[in-house]
Image (tube, rainbow, N blue to C red):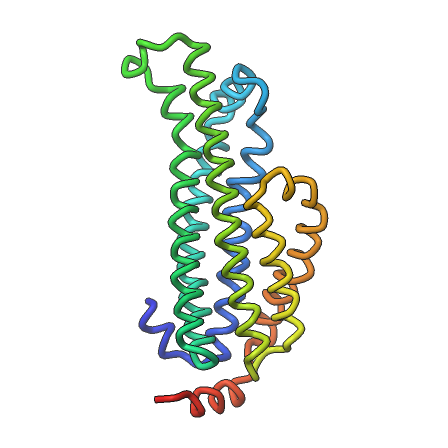
Length: 238
């Protein structure tokens, strides 16, 4: 599938990049943010366990949604590499490596997502632990999930900075989109200090909305300027 995508027109690649960006955002956000936000009570292990066991179909749906989000993100990262290698191949390749690391951390986050359910429904395999101990262990895994998600946001922020620079240097997308995406990336990278990022989250979320949504919509509706993309590709060093 990736080979076929690589052979398509730059405008189609741009539109598919926007589509997969949207799909990744919807699926991973649904599982990691919406479902866990509804079920996990971080200061009450007993309430969290009751919510998980009482809403297992929703919890499993959230897990499946996160897995799909990782897959969509890999395709999204590949498409952006294909688009921006004509601007700067080495920098685009670096961005591709960064997004693969981000996807790997996403996968770890997803594994930590499902672990608490395995603990709470382990039956005889966890019989050595008391119910309160199992509930607290499940909550610890949710906290680890949150830490892993923060790490993912740091790498995603670095990717946004790199791609923002490539958009700014490109001739086939509006430069303002690159500036906004780079600012957005700097915001996500503030998760190097989670307390600071939590304090500034309204500003980070605003920057993300002003950068990621317009880029996604531009790619889906307009794609990239195919003629300018080809001109920039022709000017690449061989």
